[in-house]
Length: 379
Ligand SMILES: [Zn+2]
Image (tube, rainbow, N blue to C red; front, side, top):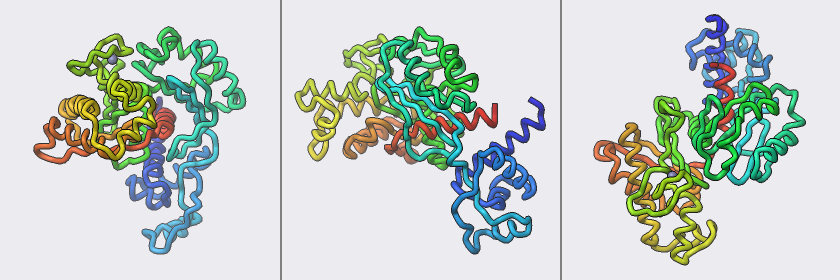
């Protein structure tokens, strides 16, 4: 890529990042925040508006708003605020979930919550899955949308190869890039689903700083945000906290090992433990059982095991914040308090400073939009 083109894209990305972080800003706010000159900001903003990436915000500039209105008047611009475009379709996003496949068409504005346009049960064969996707995508086929596909399991994001997906076995034998390029075109990105959740959390809360995200659902996974970037290993596998072994746990895991944390603290794992103790057989019944009564011993042991692994990750990576999503977000506060106290017992930083754990909703689409924007402006 030519240097000038690269620089222009970098400037555009900085403007977009600032608008994404602030929600709605004036041109002079942008100049101040990015350190670029007013004329440079105006030129880039005009370009991004013509590409329908930025749009005028309905927010009015208030009197005393850092002189934005005055500056805008001097430059002959209307005193409008800018935001990421909320209307024009730019991205196609597909979540291949263990139970459901979901699809949405999104603009560049970072979505606050996930809303899906299409949803169908993930079928038992690749041909049936591709058939359903083709049908759902038909109205969007010629719109040249960038597409992000969220994949479960152990995923090589560069190639779309899925090494391990215990709950969707056909994925391991499928060349996804070939099959999906035929449907979505060449602008296709693959991302592991838990990593997308971490990117989504950062996009929705840009001031979060570094954190370890741990999600519990059909399985359990983690992703670490370090220095504003996702931590990646030297193999296409990282953050697999769900497959840390818990001594004494004899449950067989879908990964082929015995004793993985996932078999205890995933949603099915928790339900299985509750059923073994004749306390609940479904997730809503379990939540009701755990609410407003002393925590059963098996739950304390389960949370204690999760805490050891979470604290281990914090110690190894040098992190002090944990974001818990998925099933964690639905557990009663007493469970999260217990988990937090156990983590603090084993996290070394707790002896010198603060360790924070909090639950948050899954923000998958925010992660998908963030990945797609990065691809448009960086790669
Ligand atoms: Zn496992």
